[in-house]
Every structure is written in structure tokens, then in C-alpha cells.
Length: 129
Image (cartoon, rainbow, N blue to C red; front, side, top):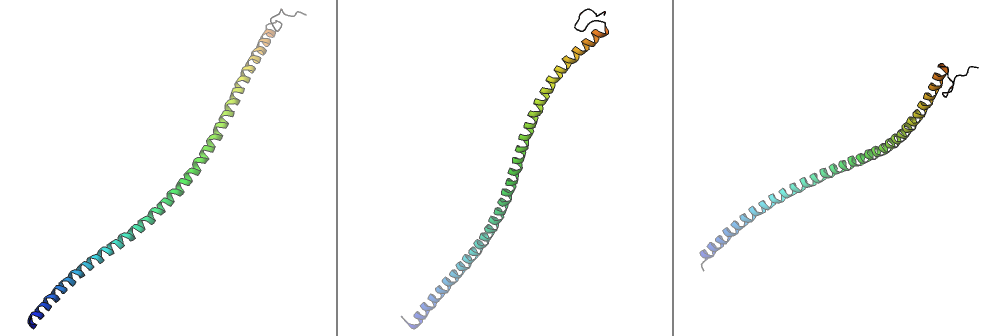
């Protein structure tokens, strides 16, 4: 092999190495862009996860407040039902008392009517004494 052939082979090898280095550089650049894209996506995911966590914290707080208010409403409803039961019982007692009062008032009216008509109360003959 002559000096010129060796130089030619060396230049060809050098050209091949240069092409391979250029291909490798392009691949490295593409890889770097992919890595940068992944880093940006990861940062966005972290931001979204934090935002989601904040939203969940707000939902938990709202749920706790709703549970508290619902418990208060249940308690108030129970008191209302008890009060309504007592009111119903009092109304029933009042109605029974009203019936009794009506009977006594009717009896009194009969006595007064008998006296006004000159009869003895209870339907007996008048007292002429």
C-alpha cells in the first residue's frame, strides 16, 4: 500500500468518523430536546398535582362544614319533632278539657233555663213555697 493509498484511506476514515460524529451530535441534540420536554412535562405534572391537592383540601374542608351543618339540622329536627309531639299531646288534653267544659256549660244552661221557666232544676215541679 502506497503512501497515497494510506492517506486516502485515512481521509476516508476521517470523513466517516466526521459523519458519525455529526450523526451522534444530531442524536445527542434530539435526546437533549426530549429530555428538556420531559423535564417541562414533569414540572407541569408537579404543578397540577399540587393544584389538585389544594382542591382536594378545599373539598375536604367544605365536606367537614357540610357534615357539621347537617348534624346541626338533624339535631334541630329532633328537637322540633319532640316539641311537636308535646304540642300534639297538649292539644289533645285541651280538646278533652273543652269537651268536659262544654258538658258542664250545657248542664249550667239547663239549670238556668229551668229556673227561668219556674221549674226546679233537674226537671221537678216548681217550688211554690
